[in-house]
Image (cartoon, rainbow, N blue to C red; front, side, top):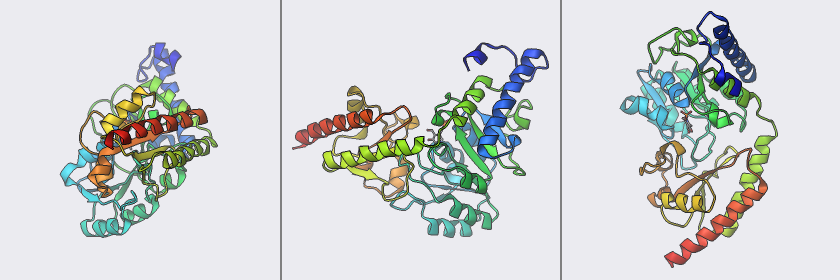
Length: 344
Ligand code: PLP
Protein backbone atom coordinates (compact mmCIF):
# COMPACT_ATOMS: atom_id res chain seq x y z
CA UNK A 1 0.00 0.00 0.00
CA UNK A 2 2.85 2.38 0.84
CA UNK A 3 4.31 2.04 -2.65
CA UNK A 4 0.92 2.47 -4.30
CA UNK A 5 0.09 5.60 -2.32
CA UNK A 6 3.09 7.25 -3.95
CA UNK A 7 2.25 6.00 -7.45
CA UNK A 8 0.48 8.29 -9.88
CA UNK A 9 -1.81 6.95 -12.60
CA UNK A 10 -5.58 6.83 -12.83
CA UNK A 11 -6.69 3.23 -13.39
CA UNK A 12 -8.96 4.48 -16.19
CA UNK A 13 -6.07 6.13 -18.09
CA UNK A 14 -4.56 4.31 -21.05
CA UNK A 15 -0.95 5.43 -20.39
CA UNK A 16 1.59 3.23 -18.59
CA UNK A 17 1.04 4.43 -14.99
CA UNK A 18 -2.74 4.15 -15.54
CA UNK A 19 -2.42 0.61 -16.90
CA UNK A 20 -0.23 -0.36 -13.95
CA UNK A 21 -2.85 0.98 -11.52
CA UNK A 22 -5.55 -1.00 -13.38
CA UNK A 23 -3.41 -4.15 -13.17
CA UNK A 24 -3.02 -3.74 -9.41
CA UNK A 25 -6.80 -3.53 -8.98
CA UNK A 26 -7.38 -6.50 -11.28
CA UNK A 27 -4.91 -8.60 -9.30
CA UNK A 28 -6.52 -7.63 -6.01
CA UNK A 29 -9.99 -8.42 -7.40
CA UNK A 30 -8.79 -11.82 -8.62
CA UNK A 31 -7.17 -12.64 -5.26
CA UNK A 32 -10.33 -11.66 -3.42
CA UNK A 33 -12.50 -13.66 -5.84
CA UNK A 34 -10.31 -16.75 -5.42
CA UNK A 35 -10.53 -16.43 -1.64
CA UNK A 36 -14.32 -16.04 -1.81
CA UNK A 37 -14.80 -18.74 -4.48
CA UNK A 38 -16.45 -16.24 -6.84
CA UNK A 39 -15.95 -14.81 -10.28
CA UNK A 40 -13.97 -11.51 -10.23
CA UNK A 41 -16.81 -9.80 -12.12
CA UNK A 42 -19.09 -10.37 -9.12
CA UNK A 43 -17.06 -8.03 -6.86
CA UNK A 44 -17.86 -4.31 -6.77
CA UNK A 45 -15.42 -2.27 -4.69
CA UNK A 46 -16.94 0.50 -2.59
CA UNK A 47 -15.82 2.98 0.06
CA UNK A 48 -16.85 0.54 2.82
CA UNK A 49 -19.74 -1.55 4.05
CA UNK A 50 -22.02 1.46 4.55
CA UNK A 51 -21.91 2.21 0.85
CA UNK A 52 -22.18 -1.48 -0.07
CA UNK A 53 -25.32 -1.83 2.08
CA UNK A 54 -26.84 1.31 0.57
CA UNK A 55 -26.07 0.03 -2.93
CA UNK A 56 -27.65 -3.35 -2.13
CA UNK A 57 -30.86 -1.85 -0.77
CA UNK A 58 -31.64 1.34 -2.61
CA UNK A 59 -33.32 -0.33 -5.59
CA UNK A 60 -35.70 -2.38 -3.46
CA UNK A 61 -39.35 -1.26 -3.44
CA UNK A 62 -40.47 -3.70 -0.72
CA UNK A 63 -37.53 -4.68 1.50
CA UNK A 64 -37.74 -6.86 4.60
CA UNK A 65 -34.84 -6.50 7.03
CA UNK A 66 -34.08 -7.89 10.47
CA UNK A 67 -34.69 -5.50 13.36
CA UNK A 68 -31.04 -5.94 14.38
CA UNK A 69 -29.40 -4.65 11.19
CA UNK A 70 -26.68 -2.03 11.20
CA UNK A 71 -27.84 1.57 10.64
CA UNK A 72 -26.42 1.44 7.11
CA UNK A 73 -29.14 -1.12 6.30
CA UNK A 74 -31.91 0.42 8.41
CA UNK A 75 -31.51 4.05 7.37
CA UNK A 76 -31.75 3.56 3.57
CA UNK A 77 -35.06 1.67 3.89
CA UNK A 78 -36.63 3.40 6.90
CA UNK A 79 -40.41 3.11 7.05
CA UNK A 80 -40.78 1.31 3.74
CA UNK A 81 -39.23 -1.86 5.22
CA UNK A 82 -40.90 -4.76 6.91
CA UNK A 83 -38.97 -5.44 10.13
CA UNK A 84 -38.31 -9.08 11.01
CA UNK A 85 -38.21 -9.34 14.80
CA UNK A 86 -35.53 -10.80 17.04
CA UNK A 87 -36.01 -13.55 19.58
CA UNK A 88 -34.72 -13.02 23.13
CA UNK A 89 -31.47 -14.88 22.44
CA UNK A 90 -30.42 -12.41 19.72
CA UNK A 91 -31.24 -14.60 16.72
CA UNK A 92 -33.95 -13.61 14.30
CA UNK A 93 -37.35 -15.20 15.12
CA UNK A 94 -37.52 -17.50 12.10
CA UNK A 95 -41.21 -18.47 12.46
CA UNK A 96 -42.23 -14.84 12.65
CA UNK A 97 -39.93 -14.00 9.73
CA UNK A 98 -41.60 -16.74 7.68
CA UNK A 99 -45.05 -15.38 8.53
CA UNK A 100 -44.15 -11.77 7.66
CA UNK A 101 -42.30 -12.68 4.46
CA UNK A 102 -45.20 -14.88 3.27
CA UNK A 103 -47.69 -12.13 4.14
CA UNK A 104 -45.84 -9.14 2.66
CA UNK A 105 -43.99 -10.78 -0.28
CA UNK A 106 -40.89 -8.51 -0.15
CA UNK A 107 -38.64 -8.16 -3.20
CA UNK A 108 -35.48 -8.25 -1.03
CA UNK A 109 -34.68 -9.75 2.38
CA UNK A 110 -31.64 -8.44 4.27
CA UNK A 111 -30.30 -10.23 7.33
CA UNK A 112 -26.78 -9.84 8.70
CA UNK A 113 -24.67 -12.98 9.17
CA UNK A 114 -23.40 -12.16 12.66
CA UNK A 115 -24.39 -9.21 14.78
CA UNK A 116 -21.74 -6.57 15.40
CA UNK A 117 -22.94 -5.81 18.95
CA UNK A 118 -23.70 -9.28 20.34
CA UNK A 119 -21.76 -11.55 17.96
CA UNK A 120 -24.90 -13.70 17.58
CA UNK A 121 -24.87 -15.74 14.37
CA UNK A 122 -28.06 -15.55 12.33
CA UNK A 123 -29.70 -18.55 10.62
CA UNK A 124 -28.97 -17.27 7.11
CA UNK A 125 -29.64 -20.53 5.25
CA UNK A 126 -33.15 -20.80 6.76
CA UNK A 127 -33.99 -17.17 6.11
CA UNK A 128 -32.64 -17.39 2.56
CA UNK A 129 -34.84 -20.34 1.69
CA UNK A 130 -37.92 -18.53 3.07
CA UNK A 131 -36.98 -15.45 1.01
CA UNK A 132 -36.35 -17.43 -2.16
CA UNK A 133 -39.77 -19.10 -1.86
CA UNK A 134 -41.39 -15.70 -2.47
CA UNK A 135 -38.86 -14.75 -5.16
CA UNK A 136 -37.02 -12.15 -3.03
CA UNK A 137 -33.34 -11.32 -3.42
CA UNK A 138 -31.22 -12.23 -0.41
CA UNK A 139 -28.77 -9.63 0.94
CA UNK A 140 -26.36 -10.53 3.74
CA UNK A 141 -24.23 -7.99 5.59
CA UNK A 142 -21.33 -10.34 6.27
CA UNK A 143 -18.74 -7.86 7.52
CA UNK A 144 -18.27 -9.77 10.79
CA UNK A 145 -17.73 -13.14 9.10
CA UNK A 146 -14.30 -13.43 7.39
CA UNK A 147 -11.75 -14.95 9.74
CA UNK A 148 -14.44 -15.73 12.33
CA UNK A 149 -16.75 -18.27 10.70
CA UNK A 150 -17.16 -20.04 7.38
CA UNK A 151 -18.37 -17.67 4.69
CA UNK A 152 -18.97 -20.38 2.03
CA UNK A 153 -22.50 -21.47 3.13
CA UNK A 154 -23.53 -17.80 3.18
CA UNK A 155 -22.02 -16.99 -0.22
CA UNK A 156 -23.88 -20.03 -1.56
CA UNK A 157 -27.32 -18.57 -0.72
CA UNK A 158 -26.80 -14.78 -0.93
CA UNK A 159 -27.51 -12.78 -4.08
CA UNK A 160 -25.82 -9.74 -2.50
CA UNK A 161 -23.09 -9.82 0.14
CA UNK A 162 -21.43 -6.92 1.97
CA UNK A 163 -17.80 -6.96 3.13
CA UNK A 164 -15.65 -4.34 4.86
CA UNK A 165 -11.86 -4.11 4.78
CA UNK A 166 -11.24 -2.73 8.25
CA UNK A 167 -13.11 -5.62 9.87
CA UNK A 168 -10.33 -7.93 8.68
CA UNK A 169 -7.46 -5.63 9.60
CA UNK A 170 -7.28 -3.88 6.23
CA UNK A 171 -7.43 -0.13 5.63
CA UNK A 172 -10.53 1.84 6.59
CA UNK A 173 -12.85 3.31 3.98
CA UNK A 174 -12.90 0.39 1.54
CA UNK A 175 -15.23 -2.57 1.17
CA UNK A 176 -17.16 -4.51 -1.42
CA UNK A 177 -20.60 -5.55 -2.47
CA UNK A 178 -20.65 -9.01 -4.02
CA UNK A 179 -23.34 -9.10 -6.69
CA UNK A 180 -23.86 -12.71 -7.69
CA UNK A 181 -23.99 -13.44 -11.40
CA UNK A 182 -27.27 -12.51 -13.02
CA UNK A 183 -28.47 -10.24 -10.18
CA UNK A 184 -29.45 -6.87 -11.60
CA UNK A 185 -29.01 -3.83 -9.40
CA UNK A 186 -29.29 -0.11 -10.19
CA UNK A 187 -26.16 1.95 -9.39
CA UNK A 188 -26.37 4.20 -6.36
CA UNK A 189 -24.46 7.06 -7.97
CA UNK A 190 -24.36 8.40 -11.50
CA UNK A 191 -21.02 9.04 -13.17
CA UNK A 192 -18.35 7.11 -15.04
CA UNK A 193 -18.22 3.48 -16.08
CA UNK A 194 -15.99 2.15 -13.29
CA UNK A 195 -16.82 -1.21 -11.70
CA UNK A 196 -18.87 -2.12 -14.79
CA UNK A 197 -21.12 0.93 -14.28
CA UNK A 198 -22.13 -0.36 -10.84
CA UNK A 199 -19.96 2.08 -8.83
CA UNK A 200 -18.73 5.17 -10.66
CA UNK A 201 -15.68 7.10 -9.44
CA UNK A 202 -11.90 6.68 -9.59
CA UNK A 203 -10.95 3.52 -7.71
CA UNK A 204 -9.04 3.63 -4.42
CA UNK A 205 -6.26 1.34 -5.68
CA UNK A 206 -4.15 1.42 -2.50
CA UNK A 207 -7.21 0.67 -0.36
CA UNK A 208 -8.38 -2.14 -2.64
CA UNK A 209 -4.93 -3.75 -2.64
CA UNK A 210 -4.74 -3.45 1.17
CA UNK A 211 -8.22 -4.96 1.53
CA UNK A 212 -7.36 -7.98 -0.64
CA UNK A 213 -4.02 -8.43 1.13
CA UNK A 214 -5.65 -8.38 4.58
CA UNK A 215 -8.46 -10.76 3.64
CA UNK A 216 -6.25 -13.30 1.93
CA UNK A 217 -3.77 -13.21 4.83
CA UNK A 218 -6.35 -14.40 7.37
CA UNK A 219 -5.05 -17.51 9.11
CA UNK A 220 -7.17 -20.59 9.74
CA UNK A 221 -6.32 -21.26 13.40
CA UNK A 222 -6.60 -17.65 14.48
CA UNK A 223 -10.35 -17.63 15.07
CA UNK A 224 -10.01 -20.52 17.57
CA UNK A 225 -7.25 -18.67 19.42
CA UNK A 226 -9.36 -15.51 19.64
CA UNK A 227 -12.41 -17.54 20.77
CA UNK A 228 -10.30 -19.11 23.50
CA UNK A 229 -9.28 -15.62 24.70
CA UNK A 230 -12.89 -14.41 24.68
CA UNK A 231 -14.16 -17.51 26.51
CA UNK A 232 -11.39 -17.28 29.11
CA UNK A 233 -12.24 -13.61 29.61
CA UNK A 234 -15.99 -14.29 29.96
CA UNK A 235 -15.45 -17.15 32.43
CA UNK A 236 -13.29 -14.77 34.48
CA UNK A 237 -15.85 -11.94 34.34
CA UNK A 238 -18.61 -14.28 35.53
CA UNK A 239 -16.41 -15.44 38.41
CA UNK A 240 -15.06 -12.03 39.43
CA UNK A 241 -17.75 -9.42 38.68
CA UNK A 242 -20.91 -10.22 40.63
CA UNK A 243 -24.14 -9.38 38.80
CA UNK A 244 -22.65 -9.29 35.29
CA UNK A 245 -24.77 -10.48 32.39
CA UNK A 246 -23.34 -11.75 29.10
CA UNK A 247 -25.79 -10.79 26.37
CA UNK A 248 -26.45 -13.29 23.57
CA UNK A 249 -24.48 -16.15 25.10
CA UNK A 250 -27.42 -18.59 24.80
CA UNK A 251 -27.16 -18.41 20.99
CA UNK A 252 -24.28 -19.42 18.67
CA UNK A 253 -21.82 -16.53 18.53
CA UNK A 254 -18.69 -15.58 16.62
CA UNK A 255 -15.66 -15.91 18.87
CA UNK A 256 -14.41 -12.33 19.11
CA UNK A 257 -17.36 -10.48 20.63
CA UNK A 258 -18.45 -10.13 24.23
CA UNK A 259 -21.43 -7.95 25.05
CA UNK A 260 -21.55 -7.34 28.79
CA UNK A 261 -24.02 -5.62 31.08
CA UNK A 262 -21.96 -4.87 34.18
CA UNK A 263 -23.44 -3.66 37.44
CA UNK A 264 -22.30 -0.07 37.13
CA UNK A 265 -23.19 3.34 35.68
CA UNK A 266 -24.49 3.93 32.15
CA UNK A 267 -22.39 2.45 29.35
CA UNK A 268 -20.93 5.82 28.22
CA UNK A 269 -19.52 6.39 31.71
CA UNK A 270 -18.20 2.83 31.88
CA UNK A 271 -16.47 3.23 28.52
CA UNK A 272 -14.63 6.35 29.73
CA UNK A 273 -13.56 4.66 32.99
CA UNK A 274 -12.30 1.63 31.06
CA UNK A 275 -10.47 3.79 28.54
CA UNK A 276 -8.70 5.64 31.35
CA UNK A 277 -7.61 2.26 32.72
CA UNK A 278 -6.27 1.24 29.28
CA UNK A 279 -9.16 -0.91 28.08
CA UNK A 280 -10.66 0.11 24.72
CA UNK A 281 -14.32 -0.91 24.44
CA UNK A 282 -17.52 0.47 22.90
CA UNK A 283 -21.03 1.18 24.02
CA UNK A 284 -23.24 -0.39 21.35
CA UNK A 285 -21.89 -0.02 17.82
CA UNK A 286 -18.57 1.84 17.55
CA UNK A 287 -19.82 3.75 14.52
CA UNK A 288 -22.69 5.17 16.58
CA UNK A 289 -20.72 6.03 19.67
CA UNK A 290 -21.26 9.59 20.76
CA UNK A 291 -24.97 9.02 20.19
CA UNK A 292 -26.99 8.83 23.37
CA UNK A 293 -29.66 6.62 21.78
CA UNK A 294 -29.86 3.13 23.24
CA UNK A 295 -28.87 0.17 21.08
CA UNK A 296 -31.72 -0.85 18.76
CA UNK A 297 -30.21 -4.34 18.64
CA UNK A 298 -30.51 -4.94 22.37
CA UNK A 299 -33.92 -3.26 22.45
CA UNK A 300 -35.10 -5.58 19.64
CA UNK A 301 -34.05 -8.55 21.80
CA UNK A 302 -36.56 -7.33 24.39
CA UNK A 303 -33.93 -6.60 27.04
CA UNK A 304 -34.89 -4.27 29.90
CA UNK A 305 -33.82 -0.62 29.55
CA UNK A 306 -31.63 -1.05 32.59
CA UNK A 307 -29.57 -3.74 30.80
CA UNK A 308 -29.53 -1.91 27.46
CA UNK A 309 -28.24 1.29 29.07
CA UNK A 310 -25.34 -0.52 30.73
CA UNK A 311 -24.26 -2.80 27.88
CA UNK A 312 -20.68 -2.49 26.62
CA UNK A 313 -19.14 -4.40 23.74
CA UNK A 314 -15.67 -5.88 23.88
CA UNK A 315 -13.96 -7.26 20.81
CA UNK A 316 -10.89 -9.49 20.76
CA UNK A 317 -8.57 -9.63 17.76
CA UNK A 318 -5.40 -11.14 16.39
CA UNK A 319 -3.34 -8.50 18.15
CA UNK A 320 -4.59 -9.54 21.61
CA UNK A 321 -2.72 -11.88 23.94
CA UNK A 322 -3.74 -14.00 26.95
CA UNK A 323 -1.94 -11.51 29.17
CA UNK A 324 -4.12 -8.70 27.79
CA UNK A 325 -7.32 -10.72 28.32
CA UNK A 326 -6.25 -11.26 31.94
CA UNK A 327 -5.31 -7.58 32.32
CA UNK A 328 -8.78 -6.65 31.03
CA UNK A 329 -10.27 -8.88 33.72
CA UNK A 330 -8.22 -7.21 36.45
CA UNK A 331 -9.38 -3.79 35.24
CA UNK A 332 -13.04 -4.85 35.17
CA UNK A 333 -12.88 -6.46 38.60
CA UNK A 334 -11.40 -3.30 40.08
CA UNK A 335 -13.95 -1.04 38.39
CA UNK A 336 -16.90 -3.26 39.38
CA UNK A 337 -15.69 -3.26 42.97
CA UNK A 338 -15.65 0.56 42.94
CA UNK A 339 -19.08 0.80 41.33
CA UNK A 340 -20.70 -1.59 43.78
CA UNK A 341 -19.11 0.28 46.76
CA UNK A 342 -20.53 3.52 45.42
CA UNK A 343 -23.97 1.93 44.96
CA UNK A 344 -23.95 0.52 48.52
N1 PLP B 1 -22.35 -3.39 8.92
C1 PLP B 1 -21.93 -3.81 10.13
C2 PLP B 1 -22.52 -5.06 10.70
C3 PLP B 1 -20.93 -3.10 10.82
O1 PLP B 1 -20.51 -3.54 12.00
C4 PLP B 1 -20.40 -1.92 10.24
C5 PLP B 1 -19.39 -1.10 10.94
O2 PLP B 1 -19.05 -1.23 12.04
C6 PLP B 1 -20.89 -1.53 8.99
C7 PLP B 1 -21.85 -2.27 8.36
C8 PLP B 1 -20.36 -0.27 8.33
O3 PLP B 1 -19.09 -0.55 7.84
P1 PLP B 1 -18.13 0.60 7.27
O4 PLP B 1 -17.56 1.25 8.47
O5 PLP B 1 -17.11 -0.16 6.45
O6 PLP B 1 -18.93 1.51 6.43
